[in-house]
Amino acid sequence: MADEFDLEALVHLEQTFYDAGYTDGFAHGRIHGLIEGRALGREKGFEIWEEIGFYEGFAITWQAIYAKHGHNDQRAMHHIKHLLDLVSQFPQINPSTAAIASGATEEIDISKLQRQIRSRYKALCASLGIKPTLRAVDAESTEDGGIQSADQQKQVWKLEEDAKRPTMQGLSF
Image (tube, rainbow, N blue to C red; front, side, top):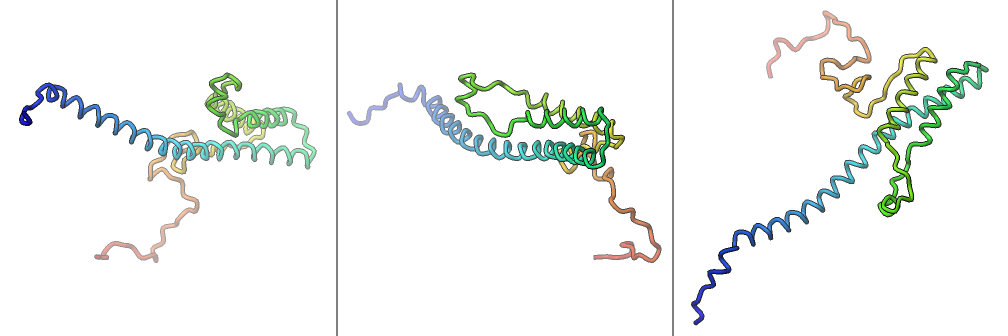
């Protein structure tokens, strides 16, 4: 009889649809997760290297200034040398997954190394007698790493209040 209905197939119908949706969603999420992960990794990598590059350029500049003018401040030169050494230890490429799994490369703690570089930069600035300007990775961040609000941002040029300048009061749009 063709009109017979298999009730056994209906018992797990909801679970069947759930499993199919989960499988499709997982595959879709994996693809988009990889795409977003690469974009985020690229963005954060550029931000970190912008900061590290600033420190390296700062140290190289002061090293050249000291060499040209014949300054013999051993403390500052020690900090410059150590800062450049730390920057040279910073990884420039991502190790392959196979190399990490086989243990061929040693694990580098990037956060620890970045903190050491920042600390050495501050020590160098102290020995040079200049105020450190921490070039944090975000345009909205403050020198100590916090986020500035819109009303805390420093102005480059002081604006003088001028009585002759037109005001927006009384204008209607």
